[in-house]
Length: 352
Image (cartoon, rainbow, N blue to C red; front, side, top):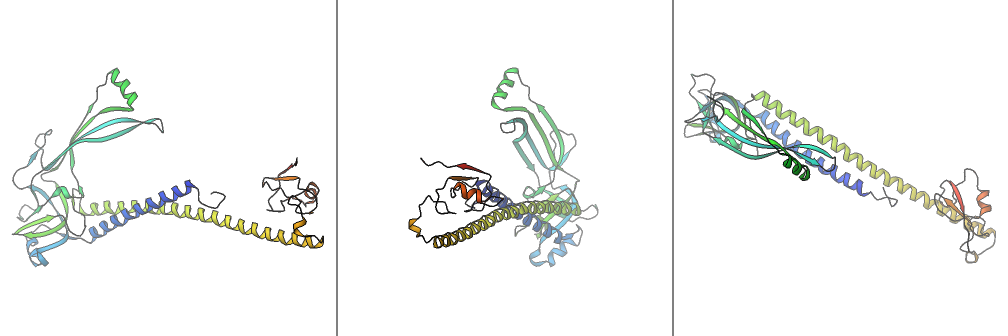
């Protein structure tokens, strides 16, 4: 805090940063809490012979937000793993990630860094069917890649280390980047996998479809069961809530500190004003006792005796207001007669 009572630049930056982070975390908390609440309130349906009848009776043959648990079954063709034999699925994601060490000029440490250099996702139409093979009803999954959490299983992973020569090593030290290698992964949603789908359930031309919901609700295609998926979302709500509370407290503490400093500064100004008014009254009274006019007093006269010249510099306040005799006459502990601050030492003032 500066002597003017205004917040310092560091305090303003701290307050702005903590306020912005609190707002961001609170926004994320509200969004995640809304997602978890709507997921908890979603209606759960079984894939059976009654599903079509339920949709026929529903308004517009549509249930806005529904939970379906079933087994993945391809409609026509399947995707075969490029690395694992007899591994078939309906969604395949191939990813190449570059791993390297980056020199941090601030901490003077090498930090791990990962960057996706290539990613390709393939998908084919698929249904969710009942665990009971005797049930013929199926639910067609529409636009699975729009899922907020497309939960895929890693079926292949391999790391290809970078071979470096001595010249390359020298160049990497100069550039501040040291490549480690390329990690190749293949993820799949395999045929026969148990999946939980959460979205809009509609009946379209005798075909039951699960598609992305409207009104901003989240679309889920997950290998977790419904209870585990709900627990996962609720744990994220708790995380964002804790972050919001922590940074909210930091913001309130910063505001309190700034206001407290301003209040202390205000009280000091009020006290100084009161002291000056008291001193002015005492000086006026002293002039009356000496039967003197204010204009006849020298500007350099001691403010206590009004006769001798000022000859003392009080530290640490820096006021020059007293002669040496009046200084020694001040009661213990000695305080500046103008600002009432303690006098730690006195420096003689010589007028030439």
